[in-house]
Image 1 (cartoon, rainbow, N blue to C red):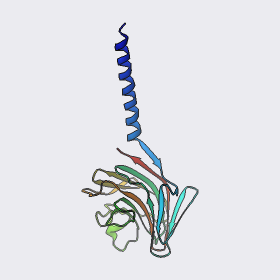
Image 2: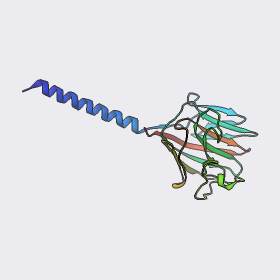
Image 3: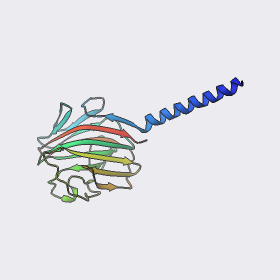
Length: 196
């Protein structure tokens, strides 16, 4: 029996298994980010962010309040549930080049059914793409699935594709949650899946 050949085949098998496991862990990493852990998030602005029973609540009496990620993310699927009241101006900021949210420095996926410019209502990528469908989200739980892959962003609201945008100059960045306009917004079941 040729033991050197057997060892060679065994080593090749072990390397293949290791590469397979590494591939699984890198392409299917999903992290729950429903917490206010200071190692993951920090607060900016005139507002309040609290967590109770795995529900993150944001409110602002004046100005705007943000909850910003400490880490940058590149290609990912962000899934979350949100429940806005009738007056809050909220949104999800992705691929922010700076750690302060703005529609110019980031891509804002809006949460504001009663936006004075309905092209920027809930489901819009603010100032870039208006929603293709009008879905009412006030005072009930809703689901966003926000996919950022390469230079494209797509937004699913309650299982329906409502907006997509290509040619994004930012291919990585910070994530932010917004609360403004004296209202209240609730988030739960936030998770991020790394796509590469």
